[in-house]
Image 1 (tube, one colour):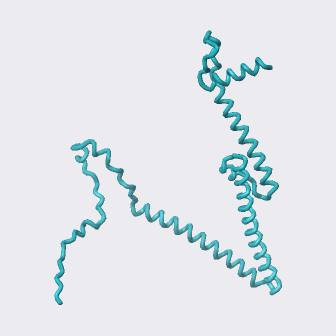
Image 2 (cartoon, rainbow, N blue to C red):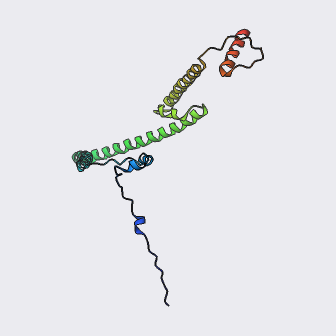
Image 3 (cartoon, rainbow, N blue to C red):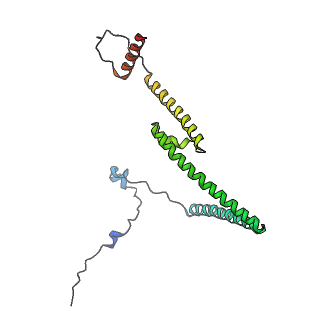
Length: 198
């Protein structure tokens, strides 16, 4: 059975990456609107600059690896000079240290979750959790109380600062039923009424 295949021409250049071309000097002269629309040329590096960057990074990595190898050798030498009992005690101490670190991290996460819940209940921003002390539950509670006090004082000060400004205008003979102008006028009328009561 003969099947006939039809081949269509394919423009492979369509799939190629566009070449970066430097704008010519007269390109902006013909159309000034297009000159400002073109993006700035990407920063280029000389081969010397690239070599310096690569050498610097390689040197940092080599130092880091050398430090790790030196620490491992020191640990290996220390273990080689220990007796079997000392090795067992050393390994037990390392396990206990790692376990204590994991437990401390878990406790810290639990305290942070509780602190976030407490901040939410007190209608305080969750961002304040970043400045709390998570050493233990008592210190965490104390730090929440301090942060709440400082936050509320700052909010109160901000409100008072916004309320300051020009004092309300003196009586201008407006009728008694005239509504106050804005928030400042309403607050001034409230305080004036309170003074009269007291």
